Amino acid sequence: MRTTLFPFLCALACRGALAADPAPGDILVKTNPPDARILLDGQDTGVLSPGLIPKVPAGSHEIRAVSACATAAATLQVREAMVERIELDLVNAPATLVIGSVPPGAVARVDGTEVGKTPLVAVPVTCGSHTVALSLDGYRTFTATVSTDPLAPVEVSGVLAVRRVGRLQVRAHPEEAEILVDGVVVGAGRVDLPVDSGAHVVTLRLDGYERQDRSITIQADASATVEARLSAEKEPFVSRIRWANLGVDATLTAMTLGLAIAARSDWQRSEASYDVYTSLGYGDDPELYYDTQVIAPLRAARILGGIAGGVGVLAVGGFVFLPVVGPASP
Image 1 (spheres, rainbow, N blue to C red):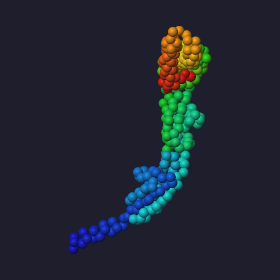
Image 2 (tube, helix red, strand yellow):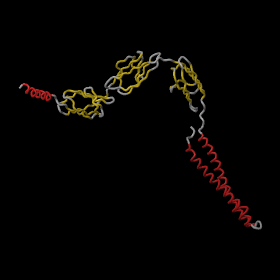
Image 3 (cartoon, one colour):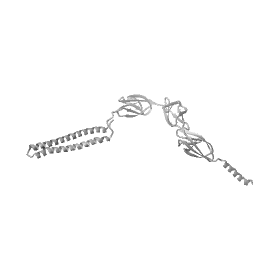
Image 4 (tube, one colour):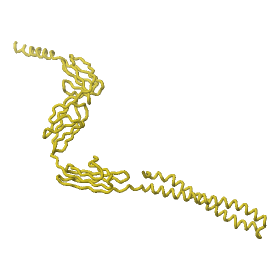
């Protein structure tokens, strides 16, 4: 009898235990603004707002929404087999940096502002991207760019390299030329300054002269010299063509006008000459004389005038369209 009742009693007990487990619920999360990450009890759910977190155990839970630089949190009671709704308004969240260096004692600057000497446990900053620089006498400056997180401090640690320096001397001609080392203006004409060992770029520039860039490697505890003479900028070839074309245009235009005036004058003279020749009865055949001595030169003048006019039109067209070939000289 006991053997027969035991499985039955066990089944009843197990059924009662299962019935006692609360059914999970769901949470529907909405945020302002949307597209925030949703965390449940500190764990990222992979859900973006607005979104549904399914099968959440009944009970009290912390809901946190996080965007790039804003966050919001609230506690929510989840009931059995229910869909709970919550709406969060995101606010800008402060962030912190933890800054260290090897060796310690370096001056730390965040976005150019000194914040103390390393180690620094909690440096308050705004959320976003920041540039951290660590400097210490005898060491090269360490620089890093970091993006902060409103959920946790961001650690920045720099290992400073021993600084080894050499000297760089630059002589520029003309002396008014500006001198840049690695893009930073260091003087004009002549400079003599200490620089870190390694590769550098020396630039010389002056208005009206061609810019020069020189690459140089500085050895530790050694000196290097750069001497350069800038060349005056040359007038662009296209600009010179324009001036030559303008001169040709002016010459051909003058020739065209001259021939046109000459042809007009010959025509007027021919009309007067014919009247004179016919009235005086000059020669045995005034008509023949007039054709050979007046009309023939007039026709030649007309032909030459037409040719010169055509050349003048081409020249003017060349002057109009040539400037599109390239830029004018400054």
